[in-house]
Image 1 (cartoon, rainbow, N blue to C red):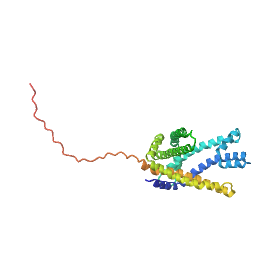
Image 2 (image 1 turned 180 degrees about the vertical axis):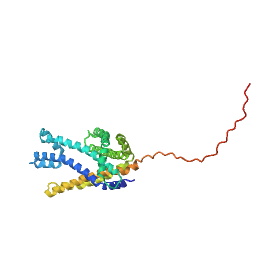
Image 3 (image 1 turned 90 degrees about the vertical axis):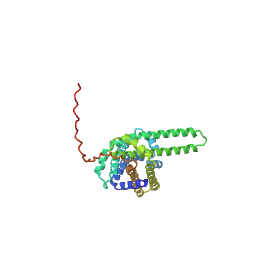
Image 4 (image 1 turned 180 degrees about the horizontal axis):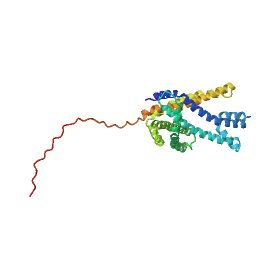
Length: 321
C-alpha cells in the first residue's frame, strides 16, 4: 500500500464517522472556552481602557499574562489559575478518553457509527492509552535531551564568533531536527494505539517500543503520511491566518464570521488528527503483518495391511546335563 492509498482509505473511514468528529470537536472547544472566558475577563478588567492592552488580549500574549499574574498576586488571576490548571488536566484526560473510542471506531470496518461502541472503546482503552502516554514521555524526553546536546555543541562551535549567522543557521537546523524527532514519536504512538486496539492487548510498553521500531523500519510510508498531513495543515493555516487577521477589529458581522472561521480551523485540526489514526489503521496490516496461525495436524487415513504371519516356535531345546 502506498502513502496516497493510505490517505484515501483514511479519508473514507473518517467520512463515515462525522458524529464522532463533532463530539471530539465539541469537547475541545468546551475546554478552550472554559479557559479563555475567565482569562478574557481578567484582560478586559485590567486593560479595558488601554488600546495596547486590547492588542495583547486579542492574541492572549503569554508574557503579558505572566506579568499580570505576578503583578496581581492574590488578585483575580490568582483565583482563576486553579480553574485553568483544572481545565488543562481535564483536557489531558478527556483527550485520552475520547481517543480510545475514536481509534476503535476507525479500526471497526462497519459502515455505520455506533455511539455505544464509541463510548465502550473510550472506557475499554482509557487506562491502556494513559499508560502509553506516560511511556511516550521517555521518547519525548530523549528528544529534548538530544536537542540540548546539539544546542550546546552549536554554542561551542560558533558561540564565540564575531558573526552570529552560523549560530542562527545551526539553531534552525536543531529546531528542524527536534520537530522531526517529535513527529517520529507522535507517529509511533499513533501506531501503538492502533496495535493495542487491533490486538486487544494490554501491553502498552511493548506496543510503544514495538511501534517505534516499526516506524523507523518503514520510515518512507509512516513519515510520508505525516508529511502529507503537514501539507494539509500548512494549507489550512495559510488560509486561516490572513483571514483571521483581516476579520479582527471589525463590527459584529466580522466578529461572528471570525468565530465561525476559528471553529472551522479547529474542526480541520480534529480532521487531521482522525486522518493520522485512520492512515495508521490502513497501513498497519501491511507494515506489521500478523503471524500465520500454527498448522493443524492433518490425519491421513491408512489402509489396513495384511495381518502379520503367525509366529511358529522351533524345536523344543533339550535341557543340558
